[in-house]
Image (tube, rainbow, N blue to C red; front, top):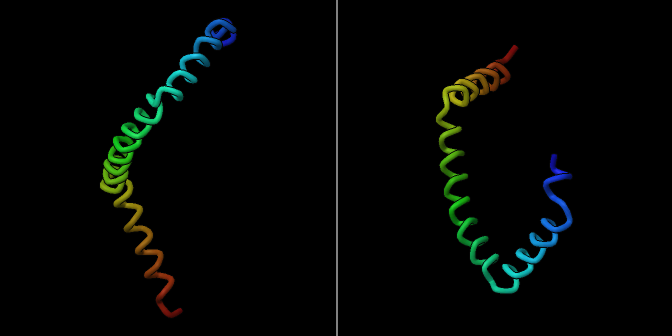
Length: 73
């Protein structure tokens, strides 16, 4: 479907819009705002992932493996 939806006219308009946004400074402004927001979102997701029960269980397994490796045989 993409080949029929994104014809030459659509591609030309997209190219025009991108060039305009770059030249006007709108792109860098949007990029900067999104980057700041994305950093916060990524940090929140990372923290949420670390608090997930599977991550907590994984940490316990790693600790057990490390403890077993340190025990003299």
